[in-house]
Image 1 (cartoon, rainbow, N blue to C red):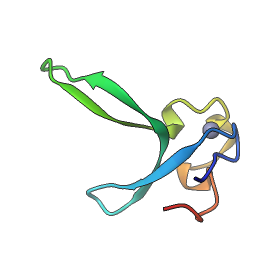
Image 2 (cartoon, helix red, strand yellow):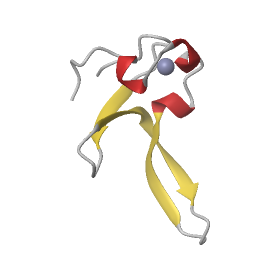
Image 3 (cartoon, rainbow, N blue to C red):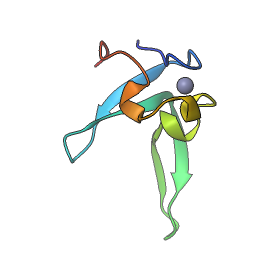
Image 4 (spheres, rainbow, N blue to C red):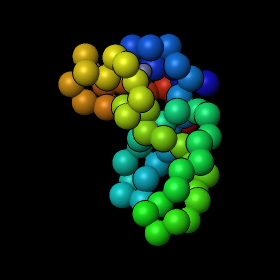
Length: 67
Ligand SMILES: [Zn+2]
């Protein structure tokens, strides 16, 4: 499993509907939408990474070895 270069957290790459690969936390999290629905999914890693401010873009977070 790939790891974040900044904080060594385990992450996964998820391809979005826009065709972009997004680094996300490997751990699944439940969130609640504004309409009250609950969704289980992965949070984009850059929203929780303590080192993210040191990266220019999310794409620089980890080497592109993971899938
Ligand atoms: Zn990180």
